[in-house]
Length: 300
Image (cartoon, rainbow, N blue to C red):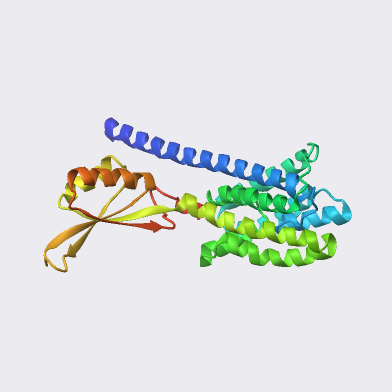
């Protein structure tokens, strides 16, 4: 083989490898940050106020209230059983990242037990903040194709197979745990827990949509080649040329289709205003975009 060609192949493979490493490094940071945020929320807001919690963590918290068992051990044991099932149902990548999240969550809960906790007198505010903080943390973890274990595992399986949103699944499945919590923590704490659960579900879904949301742009322009080149080279996004016919003019003309981030839409608008003021541009929200340059298929 030609040494020059061999060098290009090796260079290409190396660059592809580095892209994958950077992508997984981002997943590591997201999972670590998201799990840390959730562990802090449990220690700062849930346990001091005797709120019921969610999923496996909720069962662990109840065991702490009743039997004074450290939640870290219950979470670790129950999640080990769930991950044994997940290894057969879900991708190895998902299971490995989830295993990291479960181990880190258990360790942080045990570590934070020795940290002084400030008391928040307003329990409603504590419930609201708990739901928001935990929702942000969970959203960071879910968006990179991982979870913190527990009921997240069947939740991710349902999201992949049927498109069921994680927050909605969490709300329904955790209602049963809240009903059980009523007999342990009482009515008031159960109501506060329900408030935290509702806020958690909303924040999770909105966090996922915020990271995944893109703008779908349809363009009719008299300079399609120039505009397509601008999108490709300056905005670093792909374009698709569709064949269309004007309903009034009956003339054939190309329609450009592209997917951009919101800030890129503004750049494209400015370019069109300066170079083709007669262009027609339609912008709509794309709730989720999967593929090269956007969310990876491995993160589903």
